[in-house]
Structures are given as C-alpha cells and as structure tokens.
Length: 258
Image (tube, rainbow, N blue to C red; front, top):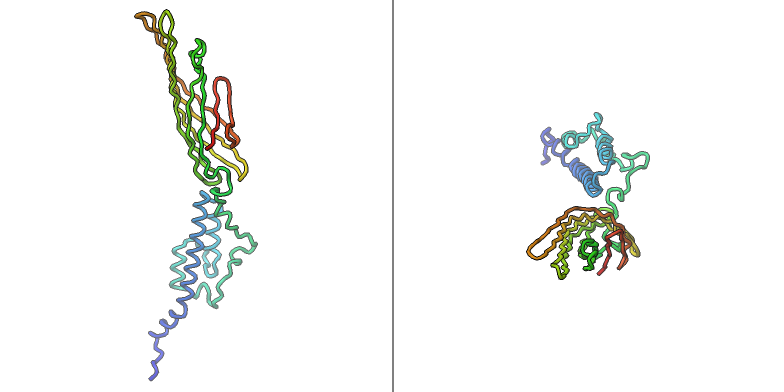
C-alpha cells in the first residue's frame, strides 16, 4: 500500500534533495574562508584579505542585500537555499572574479626561506676586538678580545640572527715605584638578519655594547682609581665568508664559520 503524499512528507523529501548541495556549499565556503585567513596570517596581514572576503560573500547569487555577514549568510543558506540557487546552477569560481584577477596562492604563502640559502644551517661566531687605550700606552696587551656565538633561525623572508658575548680583560704592569692595573669588561648583544642564495649571502647585524673600565695605580700605601663606563652600537655588514672582517678606529669584528 502506497504512502499518501501528505504535507508532512513533502518537506522531508525536499530536505533530502537539497542537503547534499548545502553540505558541499558550506564546506566550500568554510575552506575558502580558512585558506584566506591562513594566508593572511602567514603573510602577516595581507591587505587584500578584507576585499577578497567581501567579494566572496557579497557576490554570491541570492545574497540580494549584499550583506557581508558570514554567519548570517550561512543561516540564510540553511533556511532558504532556494533563494541562492533556484535552478541548481552552482556558480563557478570565475563568477566571483569576472576580470580574472583571482590572487595567486603565492600571495598568501610566501616562499619558505628554510631551503636553498647559504643561511640555512649557518653556525659560527663573531670575534670582537676592542683596543684598551690605557693598557696600550704603557706597553701592556692592547686588545680586549671576546666572542659572540651566532644563533640563526628561519623567519619570514629572511633568517633571524641573534647572539650574546662578553669581553673580560685585565692586565698589570709592575714597576719599581708600584703597580698599574687596567680592567675592562664589556657585554655585547647582537641582532640582525642573514640573506642569500645557495652560493653567497650577507650578514647584516647590529651589535650593542656596554662596557666598564677601571685604571688603578698603586704607589706604596697610596692608591688612585679612574673608572669609566659607556655604551656603543656597531652597525655591521659581512659577506658570508670565513674570516670576513669589519673594522674601524680602535675596534674590529671577525666572522668565523664552523
């Protein structure tokens, strides 16, 4: 015996017919939104994202009000799908971009710098040399020498370089009249970038130093002390070659690669 076509049965049959389209449409919308948002995050805020989302949502057939409220649009799709695609004419992607200006995926996913670069896996240290004037004038060791180990990590579009090092210097002159002691301590914080291809590259860093110097003179029971402190910032550019050096008056930095 056949089941009569009552009003209660008709909506169920319609619901069964339309449900696959709803599922497909909602999945595509969510995937498109997700790709755009993920691309914007990786690009650190692409300027095309707001316009792209508005065009995807407001230009869907059936969205007559031009409303760009995503969740409101989803609600309309669930409760009134016929208003969007009455003839089952699901739009092609090109309909959203009639001028063919759909952005390339590369705009959302920039090139990964972790491969094909001399900076990938780079390790070594930056030797720093500072002339200690009060020691040099009396014939003592003229240079305070320290080392800054380099840490190189991939980042968007380049490699981030950081490091920290110290100089600990002390020398003493013994004479018939007494002692002359020079102490120099310095800390160095390094930050910058490494860029390059497989064959060559550049290391562009800033080294911020803070130092303290103390001269002590001992004659018999008498003592004189002359303290000094200061800071200085060095802006340095190196070719990525072992032994590359950048120097100036009273200072030098030498790149050592492992």
